[in-house]
Each structure stands twice: as structure tokens, then as C-alpha cells.
Image (tube, rainbow, N blue to C red):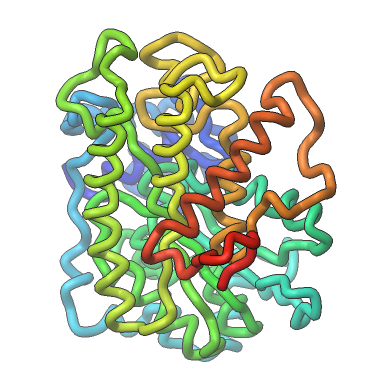
Length: 399
């Protein structure tokens, strides 16, 4: 299956509008217009308009060659061979001047807002953040500003997200630069602002078959304009794809199994980030959402998560589960845990120290469960060797 078909399938099935659309949802006219720009071959009658029927037919054609792991996640895709070249194509937006990049994005958005987002240097400790990511990152991106607001400051943040592969760092670099699958069709949402304003940090969500170069291209570009920037990769969390086959019930899940899961995940992400850290000392860190969700799963198995009824709703059929589907999207309430991990890693502070109310008081997640989420997040962050945060004196602040 070609990379272009894989991308189209993910867009049609997992098209992001801050969250992921269900596969049954028909694309809107705006989405069809966007799909046509990215995939002109989908317009089979060449009339310059993409209909729902044409989009669905193109999706069906893509599905015909899609090999799956048997667990609902496509793993059969290939990056453009251009990633192995010494340089990106000369027309890549990242090679242009800041003024040219802003002008390109201004043409893309056609007067709908300022092509450059910028924030004055905060005097309250806030970090100015840019970020990419997919649906695994959206829960944290959504809750982080609420957490910082409770801590007394507004979170300056600009993101360019997508569903599935369309939110990966590789995909976003190609899309923003107008190269490879987006040849001559750039959409430099982040590049325009990075080149024309000051930023303090960049955040990413991981994807299958990630390589260091998918991140180093972003790092190199950012450091041209904000040399002090630091970079943070979420390591996601255990999913059903780590099992040989789908279980019939949740009896398979044990504390020991999650120990195995976290060992597997850390082996992958620690290697990737360690390579980047070697190339960029004191610049790249892991946001250990994987450790946090593993700790939460083990706490549930010990009966220590009040109100939580299961591990995965897809298997156990309980709404109040840690995960809600076979792909591994978070269950209700656990978006807070991811947000707390983001906050703790970025700011080196335990969310347990925040005294103001962050989220509405609800039956579920209860204040007691929310308190446990905060504790787990700080434990995961301070115990991870690549988070950049330690708390040896246990005062809730980074050493």
C-alpha cells in the first residue's frame, strides 16, 4: 500500500477537527475541499470538485490494499525516499526567509487570521509552546491550558494536529514544507510562526516507524530562530497492539503484564530520544505518559482507582475504563492524567501543589480520583530518566 493511500485512509477515517471523526461520518464540504487539494487523483471525473461518493470510492480503493495487524491499526506504510537524501527539495518552505514563509501561509489561509502567531515573553514562568500530534495528544493539549490557568497563568500554545499518521512529525513536516506527498502545496502553519516569533518549547506525539530525522528537522529549524528552545516527545502508552491477539476478557491484564508493556515501550522511546539527546545535549526530553498510564493500570488492578471499572472498554464493556477502544484512546477522565504529565514535565512542578479548582467537581472523575491522577503524574515524571525532572527532596518542585 502506498504512503499516499495510507494517508488518505487515515484522513477519511480519522479526520481531525480537534478530535477524530467517526468512520461513519460523511466529510463536510470544507473537508472535501481540503482532501481534493491533498489528493487530486480522488477527483475521478476531473471536474475540480470532490464529491462524497468520490471520496468514499477512493477510500474503498485504499482499503482494498490495506494490510492490518489484525488489531485495527495500519502498519503498512513507507516514508518517501526523499527522507534519505542529503537535503530536502529546494522548494521546501523551511529553506525560505521568514518573510517568505509568512507570505506563503498568508496565501493558504487567504485572510482568515494572522499568518503569524506570537506572544510577548511571559514574566510569569509560562512557556511559549508549538506542537504537533494526533488524537493521543489532544487530551493533553486540551487539559494543559486548564491546569496552567489554575496555577495562575495562561498557556501560550500553537498546535498543528491531525488524526493518526496525519498528526505525525514526519507528515506535518511534509505538509508544512510542501514536499513529497504535498509537493508544491505547503501549509506552513507552525513554520511561519516559528520563523517570525520567539518560542520556548515544542511538543510532539509519536507514531509508528518514527526515525530521529523526523524530529531533528523540526529541532534544527526551531533553533535557528529560538536557540534556547527545548523539545518534548510524549511516549504515548500501552495499547492492545502489544498483545499477540485480542483477549476475550480482561483477566489477561496483570501488574506483571503492564511491567512488560512499559519495558517494551521504554526500550523504543528511550532509544529514539537518547539518539536525539546525543545530537542535541540538554534539549530533548520525554513526557512519560506511558509510565503514567501504566502506573494507573496497576493501581486499578490493586483496587486503588475509585470509580474506574475496567482496563479497556472494547474488551470489558465498561464505560469507566482506562482506555475506550482497540486503538488505545483514553477513557473518560484520563485526559486529566495526560495533562498533568505534560504540566509536570514542562514546568517541573507537581500538580499536587495547585490549590485552585482545576476541573468541575463531578461524581466521576471524583476529586479523590483526580488527586490520585496528580500523584501518579508526578511519580511518573520524576522517576523517568529522560524527563529532565527529579525531586529528591520530595517538595513537589524539580531539583
